[in-house]
Amino acid sequence: MSFVAVAVLFASAQVQAQTVIPFDGATQSSYYPNPGWSGPAANLIDDNPATQWQSHGCSDNEGKDYTPSVTFFFDDIYNVGGVSIRNLFGGAAERGARDVDILVSLDGVKFDYYTSIVVLKDTAADKDSCMVQDFEFLGGVDAMAVMFEFKSNHWNWAFYPGHHEGTWANASIVGLVDVQFTQTVPEPAAMSLLVLGGLAMLRRKR
Ligand SMILES: [Ca+2]
Image (cartoon, rainbow, N blue to C red; front, side):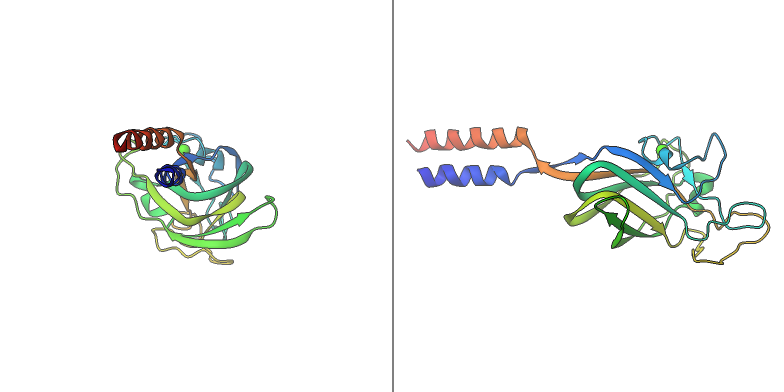
């Protein structure tokens, strides 16, 4: 009887849920200053598909951001279990991120490579139908800050020092719409349900 009770408690501790990690801010290597459709990386942490971040490109008359990146900061160290991303859509879909290196930091200063992801092109016409892409970090990774280094976009533009587009920037711009990190925590509601279920089982056995 007591073994059953212990087994139920053990099982209940394994029930987990994903919760959103609160942001403490975001920075960027550059941004395309165009109020209404593109602004700084703060636009990536507002869970609002109407606001975007786009880099300033690599051209004669605009920015010289050959290695674009954005960095996200938390208020503490969290075990990051995954990330949800909205990519650029509609007329900007080709500028959307494709190959992204993810780096993590425990102090917001020193970053180490963690993994790489491929973000799909979003074929949605507008913000109301753009998709959320989920990436899971198996086992999670401890971080107080996470950096995205963009290696390519859906124009097939590769980002590296000196890769210059020409007079104006278009294909050498990369961007995103929204980013949200999650952590895995025990689910209290499910835990109580399981404990109640276990008690019910014990009663039936009597
Ligand atoms: Ca946004």
